[in-house]
Length: 113
Length: 115
Image 1: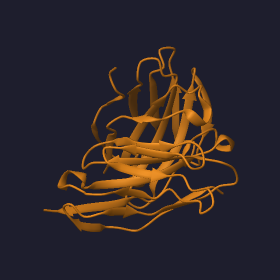
Image 2: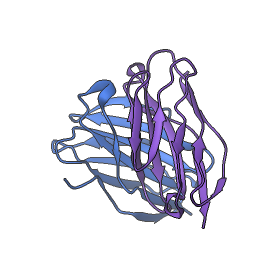
Image 3: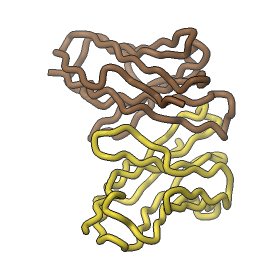
Image 4: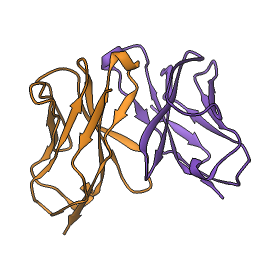
């Protein structure tokens, strides 16, 4: 079935470091792809999305490009801040699954000052 | 626009009891989805309601049920609670009519603890 694989965490970085969180997917068709972020004690916030190949989603300095050839949607940020510490979830939705979200396991990000 | 609201935020129940959680979607959204989040299983889809009808269902036992009202507000019910039902229950709303362009917006969740 359709699935999402994320790099395991926690990922620990110093402030202003470059961030990459890997996400790859398996799907029989052409999914929409999402990154959500969960801050401690809160629900999920949409960070960015892409609905077709080569789309680039961007928000708050974060970017991710929908790469169909490598079935990937890696999250990047050029300079992280302490406030970016959170858990990041990659997800996909497919027409065949009535667009329910299928989730990766989440990657905990810790930014040290 | 106001975001997705969920009540209550925290609940403590004992095994065997039942519980009802409520979700109010963003105004104008007709689709409400429910997810369970646990440290062991991660995020799992429970069900989706659109215009008062269950449109999609995940792999959960029949003890988990839901409904949606004409104003799009939704409730989920868990009967005969088990320890393993302790989780964060998240509700998400979306327009429900945009297919692959739809985006789900989440509420803060209800933290259920079963003792």
